Image (cartoon, rainbow, N blue to C red; front, side, top):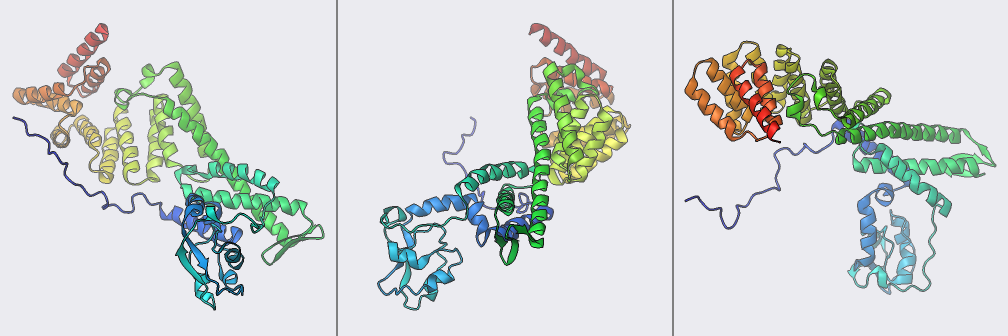
Amino acid sequence: SEPHEPLIPKFTNHLVTTNFWQTFPSVAVAIPFLFVCGFMTVYFLGQKGFCTYACPYGGFFGLADKFSPGKIRVTPACNQCGHCTATCTSNVLVHAEVKQYGMVVDPGCMKCMDCVSVCPNDALYFGFGKPTLLAPKSNVIKRHYSLTWPEEIVGAPVFLGSFLAVRGVYALVPFLMALGCAAVTTFLVLKTWRLLRARELSFYRFNLKSSGKIHKAGLAFAAFACGWIGLNVHCGWVRYHEFLGNIAFNKVHLPDELVLAQLDPARWLSPADRQNIFEGKERYVAASRTGLFVNNEALQKLAWFEYLLGDAAQSVQTLHAAAAHQKDESKALSLYYRGAILNRLRRYEEARASLDEALAERDDLILARQEKGESLWQLGHRGEAVSVWTDAVQRNPQLALVNNELAGAALASEKRDEADLYERQADKFTPNNPLYHWMLGRRLQDLGMTALAEKHIQLAGQLGAEK
């Protein structure tokens, strides 16, 4: 009888990884990330500027703080000296709030205990009690805001637009960095607007404008602001084209196996597919021409569009350019597709070199082994081809095409029993689909395995007629 699955599944540990840095940004992204989120947000927005105005966790915890029972609280020993407020790095009016509410209710309080440590009377402490929601509502301390309501209304779409413009541009800018950029952009837009409208304006110790006259510091600030805002607009232009290109790419649903079965896949393209491919190609080309950096993900998709439109040679060049800016799995895939297309172009030596590079990046990329076997077979290195294909089916016995290729190789060597074994294995895992049989027939025909090719082409015709 067949063994039963255990009642309780085996425990596995997913808390440990062997590739800790895999999901981290590269150094080229990490340095500007720290500069924007660690320096610029603090310089323009103040201490904890990123946490207050950009970080989504800050917004969540600010709301949660209203329900939190843990607060900085006060005893009757407080004499309102103000040491606590002077020490607070979050700009909380500690002395006023503890007098009014008996605790600090400002969600900006970080519970860092600085105010507790400087109190000369030891009147402050961290303790549990009623949350902010239950604090008395009478005589609420009047808050002073740095923005007017019109500025708030203008700032919201500016922040959103800047975030959407920067997020993911060039496949580089991560979510939190985009938030930091959007916060800085919003500040600069509003400050520049004030520079144009107000009679008096300063920034830290710099006098930007006085008596209606803009000073040199104001001109320098305006120049920097225009440069930064212009860079955001440029990123938005590039991101817009990348976004529309991605939409077009996602509308084209063609199986790789079918498209790569022959050099010109035009027969499989519907009018809608052609329209989406042309549209997507134009968008990716526009983004790459005007972009300041290379978007290697967009290059991969552009190369696929070029191949679908029949320009295989240009597709090979584009994939080579994409691989030059990639690493790990992405690079392996670009090199694999490049090798596969080179095989269709009958440039087998170049194909083998590209596939070897792909396998150097990802040794477990079995399809690259299958394509490498085809390159070797066409170059006359049949023993090496069989060795590569054998390695592939040992890694995955369900590869119908590779089993067929091994069957064809065995027939070429007049090893009938071995050929029958591989052919049965291939038939076992071949879908009962006319297009799949047609694909197998074309691939085997290109390798000169005529008998097996005719078998699958006939099956494709029979199944197609039945449908």
